[in-house]
Image (tube, rainbow, N blue to C red; front, side):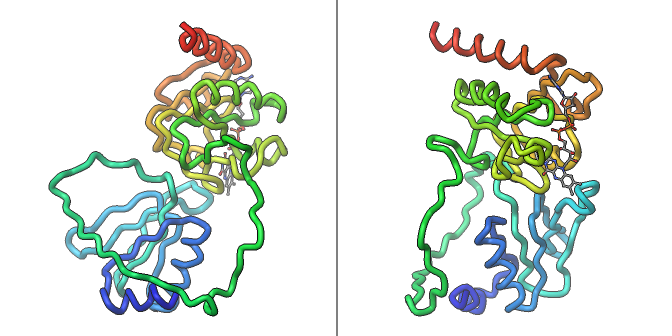
Length: 254
Ligand SMILES: Cc1cc2nc3c(=O)[nH]c(=O)nc-3n(C[C@H](O)[C@H](O)[C@H](O)COP(=O)(O)OP(=O)(O)OC[C@H]3O[C@@H](n4cnc5c(N)ncnc54)[C@H](O)[C@@H]3O)c2cc1C
């Protein structure tokens, strides 16, 4: 913490971006308080007001029903934490030549107040983290039971992806919270996102709308998920998903 404050004093940054990870949320807020400046937490979009130089920090508000744009116009640095996976990787621009300054940082052992005593595995072996997965196969209340998620696991495995879920599936006890996508779960932007038996509530869509290609499978043709989907499959997921797995396996073998 002290070393970050020293770096701020040395470089007088205009803006500080911190990842909205468990550590980043902790660190960002402490730095902001120490520097007596503002911090917008959990941003999902950013832009810059060219006239004032203020960053326009954007984040879901009021239960995800609207997006708030927040400015820190009075103090510097302006600070924000950004959700992992919320931003698409842009194309490389050779005209952009950022300067990277590497600082030697050391923390004397006596200053470290916490000690790692053990690791508890949160994921199964070979499981890919949601924010790192290129393909996510998510299921919602339409899965009907924890056991039925094995249908999605088969599809995820065939595509080297991972399984995600809606909050309804977590609330029902079918999936762990670490697999929840949405406003109160992970924000993801995989290359392909399957939404199976998920209606498409705003709080869910807030966490996956930046995905490259969205494929929705739902038996209700009026489900809101179809408004954000690139491919809309109207049908019973218990017929559609096994058919997809069969076809994929046939192609992989052939
Ligand atoms: C403050 C707040 C934060 C929230 N955060 C989140 C969040 O982070 N993530 C999240 O997901 N939700 C979140 N929610 C909850 C959200 O509002 C919805 O309740 C939730 O997303 C609904 O989950 P669902 O789509 O799985 O279930 P439902 O809305 O019940 O939809 C189930 C869908 O499955 C379809 N279906 C059923 N059977 C089949 C079948 N056999 N084949 C195909 N389709 C079928 C149905 O047609 C239906 O569309 C939040 C809510 C609040 C208030």
